[in-house]
Amino acid sequence: MNKIQKTHKGFTLIEIMVVVAVIALLGAMIGPTLFKKVQQAEKTRVAQDIRAIESALKFYRLDNYRYPTQGQALSALINVPTGAEDRWNGPYLESMPLDPWGQTYLYAYPSTHGRDFDVFSLGADQQENGEGADQDWGNWNIQ
Image 1 (spheres, rainbow, N blue to C red):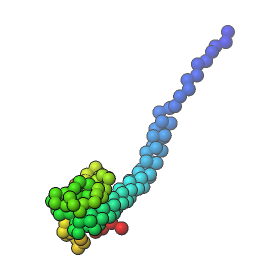
Image 2 (cartoon, rainbow, N blue to C red):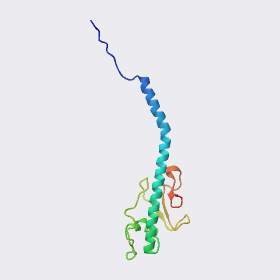
Image 3 (tube, rainbow, N blue to C red):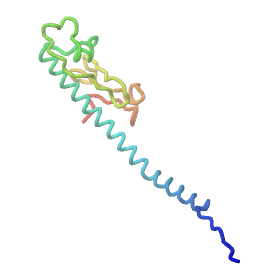
Image 4 (cartoon, rainbow, N blue to C red):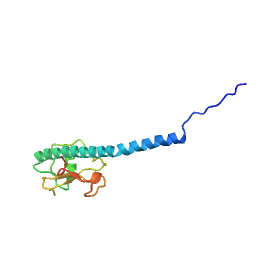
């Protein structure tokens, strides 16, 4: 009489722990590089958005002989501001872009940074100053 031996196939606890440890090490090595690329992409997007808004503001100025007031803000690039109906030749932007953190860009006129106007984002924390993702990005400090 032949005895049929049952064999169990599977992974041992040690093998599973080794695989988890290798995955954790790879994540620890790749994570910082990936995070740096995300911050670089956010900075690039902010720079492109600000340049587009700056261009629209310059076209607005050509038509209206001045930049929008602080009260009109950037909405003057999309909607006809009161008192400019006869000279306004917009919309100067199809829609107002949002920064990478989902907030509208801010506008200051006159500038507080030695320019004609300021267009900026307060970063992820939506508060002035900060570092990394919380840094303020504006037309005075983008490349």
